[in-house]
Length: 190
Image 1 (cartoon, one colour):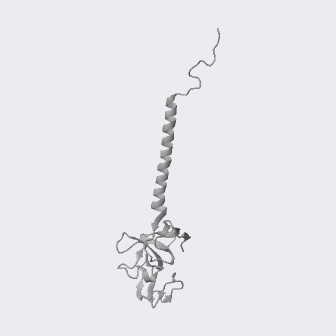
Image 2: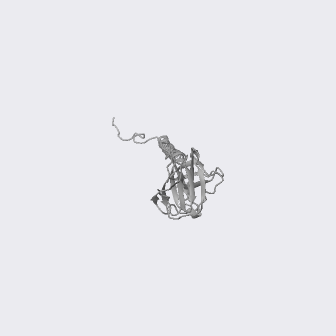
Image 3: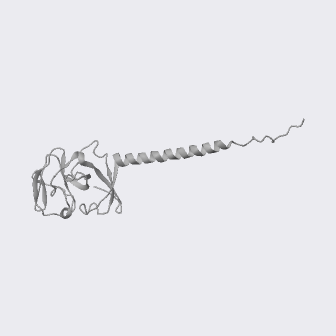
């Protein structure tokens, strides 16, 4: 009897259902990756970084109107806010609007403005973080514990603690420290 090679019809052919299973597996793997990326993005945005656009000129010349910035939500997990930090916070007079200002007065300090000079506990503020002097007189105000006095760098055009009904921002209302302006004027914020 003669042996015939290569006549078996199943040799080298894979069943069709394996191809469908492979395609379905590939789809599920890709969906899993997309879902993990979305979850990571959500967690990053909710707990680590905030993305914001600056709507006004109150922080010029440091941050310009229209700048897009990244805010580090973790900046005060292990440390306290410092004078000079540019922060995003919840506006104390309405409890919902987000503002961007610089911390000028710290808890327990008395702050006052006279003839364009800012005084902290009776001493002139060494660095006032601005090139635009405002001759508005304000205060004296004593900053409560757990709160901060905020001012914009554009002192002549800034709606800040000097004018608010509730003068101070509570520590728990600070969202985070502004870290980077990335568009259209890329730079590290200080």
